[in-house]
Image (cartoon, rainbow, N blue to C red; front, side):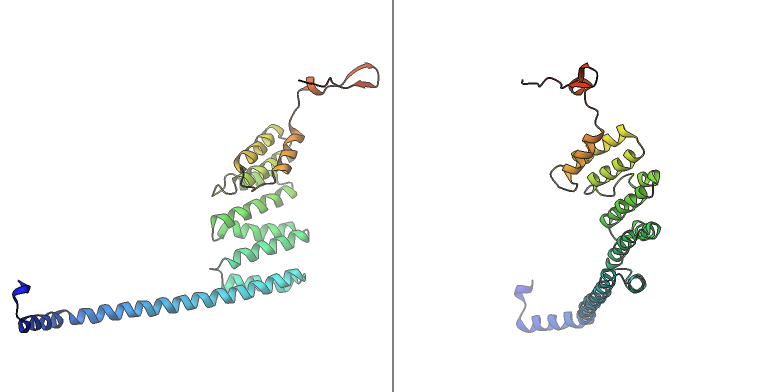
Length: 234
């Protein structure tokens, strides 16, 4: 038992343990220090890369603001080629799509949005791109393509928006009953989150909701003279 060892015996035992295990401790310490140094270097590298990507993105946004489309395209290409692993690429493609929409270049806008749909870094950014691309397709009267894009969201946060835009596509196709259902689902899915403009969606729903003819049909006793329906005071 260790508690019965003399001081000399304990010292000898410690030396033996160190002799046997010392090399392993040195290796373990070296690995730990190397990992720490490597992690710190990686952190510094990723921070530097993010700062560089951010600077290029700001240059792109400045070019868009001043309508320098060629420069903006060059900055986008730089982001794709050099910083494709950062979310700045997705944001830049969305910004370029908006620029092309403002210029009524719908095919070009669709191409940028499709790129984000295909390879966006997160489900949220891909869903945003799907929504915007669907609106472009509706503008191009490609309603079936819009509906296909909005088959189902990858996350539920934007479900209400998906239903709203599906309703817009179906309304444009004169599929009124289905459009009504989508607008109702948009309001139900939204709850109190405020993802959609509830007043606007409700207005679109009201425009296509049939009203009981008994409540609104005008009655006449002379040609050309309408008698308003009786007011319900109950």
